[in-house]
Amino acid sequence: MKKKKVEANIRLVAAHARSVAESRASTAESRIVMAVIGEDRPGIMAGVTSVLARHNANILDVSQTIMSDLFTMVMLVDIRGVKVPFATLKTALEEHGREAGLSIIVQHEEIFKAMHRV
Image (cartoon, one colour):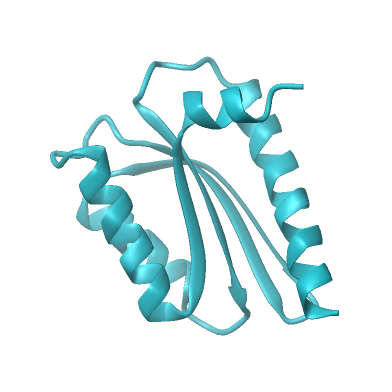
């Protein structure tokens, strides 16, 4: 049952992220799409946004919701101010996710769009 909830959340998160990404003009490789999913508890958003802030990333749009006991969040993030390579930022976010018991998926906006074109 829980696996079905997670799969349904991932589909909803992906649909929302697609609409967010498509609604904004793209600047190649300066924006990323992030999806965060995990058991709901205080501090999830604070932890993720602190990683972004440490790297000087700017959140352009965010949507988060709680479905039963699952926290889901999608962010569109401007990374023009980030001084480290994308791979370093992605690793930092994914590492935070592992430590916090979250699934964090990070992709360049253009890659995300290409993967989700119908």
